[in-house]
Amino acid sequence: MRRACFCICLSIFGLSVVSASAAASTIHGTRYSEVTRGVVLSTVEDVTSTTGTVTGTLIAHGTSSGSQMASAAVPSCSLGLGGPISGSTITVANRGANLYTSFTGTVCESTSTSTAATYEVKAAFTITGGTGRFSNATGGGTFKSKATLRATPQGSQGPVTTRSRGVIFLEH
Image 1 (cartoon, rainbow, N blue to C red):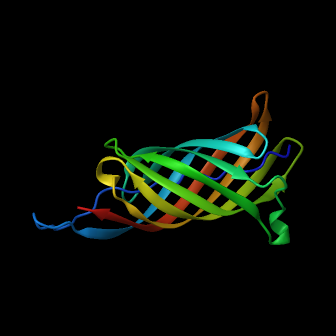
Image 2 (image 1 turned 120 degrees about the vertical axis):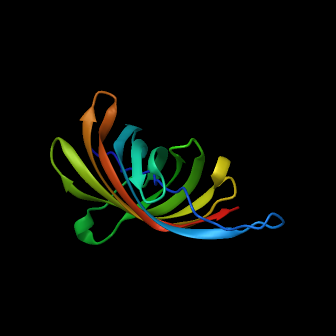
């Protein structure tokens, strides 16, 4: 079962308290810490998609979806190496605004049995904008994900958890 990993869908962001004058925009950076729990699905080798629920300091409750592409040969984590992984995510905040992110990092296989494999991802992400209150959002950070994939008739599928930390800059 050599389905390459996933990562996940960062999650993120939301409310910040900003004072702004009527005549000028103010950009305010806010630190956040988010957790996304969801499902990763691979129907094509080395390409996965994710969906999940986001909780944390800024979104409170939202949803996330994304897609990832990993290298064809994912190395064992015991080798201290990781294969390349990249992707993008869309997080829908609890009030409906979308936040867009892209990421690059490494993926490795931490355990493998005849029925499942566990993958770990470490990546840096960049906030690339959004809709609503995130329309001019910028920023970024890092995240770590862990997913266990099991073979299914449709490909591979399993649970994933991602922990993200970073900064978002919102223009008001």
